[in-house]
Figure 1 (cartoon, rainbow, N blue to C red):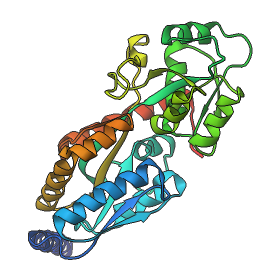
Figure 2 (cartoon, rainbow, N blue to C red; figure 1 turned 180 degrees about the vertical axis):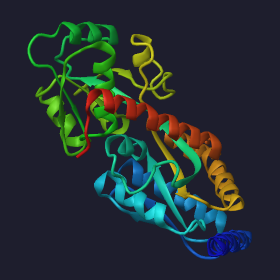
Figure 3 (cartoon, rainbow, N blue to C red; figure 1 turned 135 degrees about the vertical axis):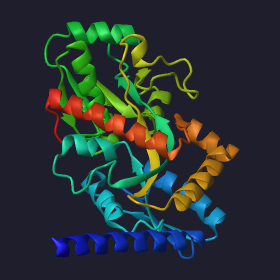
Length: 324
C-alpha cells in the first residue's frame, strides 16, 4: 500500500513539474519555428488555408511557421502525429471536417478527435453544393426532391470518396427523404464532377470550390447548398433545409493542437488567428470561395467538434457507411 502511495505521489509531482515547465516555456512562446500540419497535398483549399494562416502567424509571432503536408489515410496520419506531439504549441494541425467524420467511420482510430486535442479556433465554415447535370429535369430544389422520390430505375450519386462530406451528405439526404440511391465513390472531387458532367450518374453534394467552376461555365446546375443559412457568395441559392427542414452538412476548417496545451499559449494563438480572420483581404478571399469566416472560442470549437462527431456517428450507425 505504501509503495502505491509513493508511486501516486511521484506521478503527481511529475505532472506538476511538466505543467510548470510548459507554463514557463509559454511565457516566452514562441522561441523556435512552429510546425503546422495539414492533412492534404500541396494545392487545394486545405493547403491554401494552411499557408495563408501560417504566413500570418509567422508575421505576428516573429517565428517561422512551417507547413507540413501529410496527405494520406484521410487525415489520420496527420491527426496521429499531432495527438502524440508535446503539447508545447510547436505542433499544430489545420483540421477539417474529415477529422470528426473519421472517428464516426473508423472505430479503431489511434486517437479521439476531440479528447486528444486542444481546440484553438474554427476558422471557416462552408457547405456542399447540390449539383446535377444541366440535362436533368429538376431546375429547382423542390423539383429535385420530387424527381428523386419518383425516380424509376437505378438512382446514383457520386462523391470525392468514401467517408467524405459529399458521401455523408448523400447518406443524410437518403435517410431524411427515404430515397433509394447508390453511392459511387471517386478518388477526388475532380473525377467525380467529370463523370457527373458526362451524365454517368444523377447528382452530387460537392465541395464548393471545385463545383462552382463548372456551375459558372454552365457544365453543371446548382440547386442548393447544405449550410444552415444562405451563403453571402451565393445569396440566390436556397439551402436544402428550406425544403427539407433539419438538413445540414457543414464543411469546416480550424486549428487544433495536442491535448494539454498551456492556456496562455492557446490564448496567444487564438488571438493572432482571430486578428488574421478580421483582415479584409483574408475575409474577402474566404467569402469569394463560398465559405464563411468563423473565429470561435476554444470552448465553442470543442463543443462544435463534439456535436459534429455525434451527428456523424448516428448517421453512420443508421446508414452503415464505411471509410476506405
